[in-house]
Image 1 (cartoon, rainbow, N blue to C red):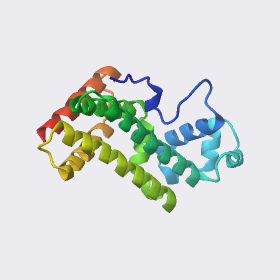
Image 2 (image 1 turned 60 degrees about the vertical axis):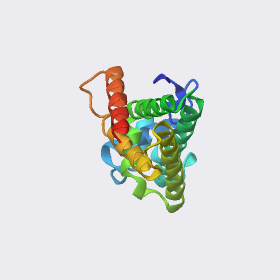
Image 3 (image 1 turned 90 degrees about the vertical axis):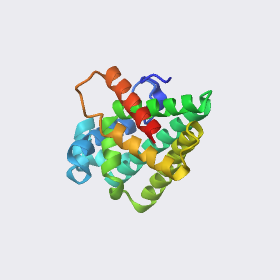
Image 4 (image 1 turned 60 degrees about the horizontal axis):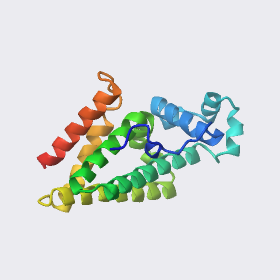
Length: 199
């Protein structure tokens, strides 16, 4: 089972000090999650990383480009992480547990990114939206295939709906802090697996 500190669950593999580009993306994610995409300006993002707003244009063409890279990166990392968990497990049941734990860890470790992803798909440029949608559909298919492998009585359309339901359960909870990180991760994993088996 993958530990929460595994860098493969992070939007980007980080070695040493984050690059200025990664600092901008991290700061923008926090600001977008708190104030909404339209409530944040380039100057706000610049101030959060200690540079002038115009200096950000050396790294991104604008706020739309920041959001596009952010959401594309999230979707790519979820897809690649999901494929790895599904293919590396010895059994379908283990693969399903690994997928649930992987998504849980991602949501708990990156709550701002989850919030931005859920709220801002409509703010993406058309090209970025199409790419993110494609990656998200592929991620759902990884889950749906794993669900049907683990529970052959569940038809594929139902498995897709199950995957979306589990995403909703897990993604809505990172903002709850009644429990410690490890205990909350275990609770979400148990609840998600229980919901899937109830299907």
